[in-house]
Amino acid sequence: MRVFVQIPCLNEEETLPAVLTSIPRTIPGVDRLDILVIDDGSTDRTVEVARSLGVTHFVRHSRNMGLARSFVDGVDYALRHGADVVVNTDGDNQYPQARIPELVRPILDGTADIVVADRQTAKIEHFTAFKRVMQRFGSWVVNRAAGTDLPDAASGFRAYSKRALVRLNMVTRFSYTMETIIQAGYKRLAITSVPVETNPKTRESRLFRNIWQHMIMSGSAIVRAYLMYRPYVIFAGLGALLAIGAAVPFVRYLILLLLGEQGQNLQSLLIGVVLAIGSLLAFAMGVIADLIRINRSLIEDDLELTKRQRYGD
Image (cartoon, rainbow, N blue to C red; front, side):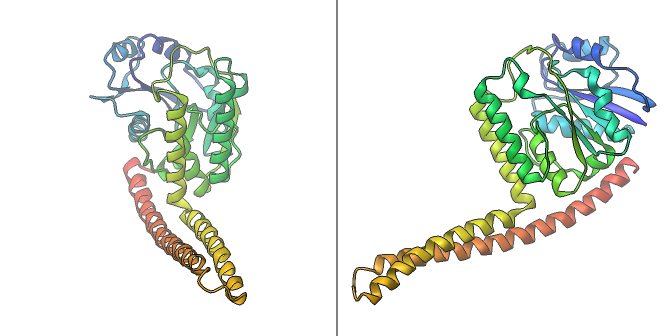
């Protein structure tokens, strides 16, 4: 059993030593543990610091590609080098690396495919009350979309089995955290969580400028992932809503017609027709989107087979 701990980094020369020195070098049930540093276009001495502390596995980007791309490239490297489990942590030392064995344990026991660390955001001192509410709301939305029950869906401290990584396919460029959970829920992968306590804050996030950008980007990633796997729910709901809206002016038109008030009800008829057409279009788009979903599922089956051949599974 081989575990890779991957660390996406962007100018982390100051905090990386604390991360590397706190990663356990042995885990019960694990034959080999390797550390992989993903340099996402750093302009400082991140790579030199990692090498001086014994890291031998690197993925390097000549320019900043973003967290999602770093995650994908790191996973590809780890799987090509024989990883059975991949643990993702951060280079800013916000996560307690000493808890990595607890993240890996459910996978080693065969009870989970993905393990997400619950940061217990209500206890994080530097989180404002608004941010805590938004974190809970975001996790609720993701859980509703994925059919899961994770208290901290946005946490990036998590472990993946090789089986899970072969089946998952990243599309978003912002952050993989939400998308992987929705995909995993749709593909019936076993997901669980482990409570952890985060380390003190070392710097501001480089993933987003403020909470509003984070909310917008995360929301768009959730909607995109949901549309990819359950488009019929959204379009059927929209079509039903428009159909109900069309029924109201149609009923008004009929009532006015029965009362003999000619000439005062044409606007209701026009509004009803427009809403009815919109409803039909929504249902038609739902059918088309579902056909695309089916085609995507077939393509993903072929891609999974290709990955198994590539990674020797």
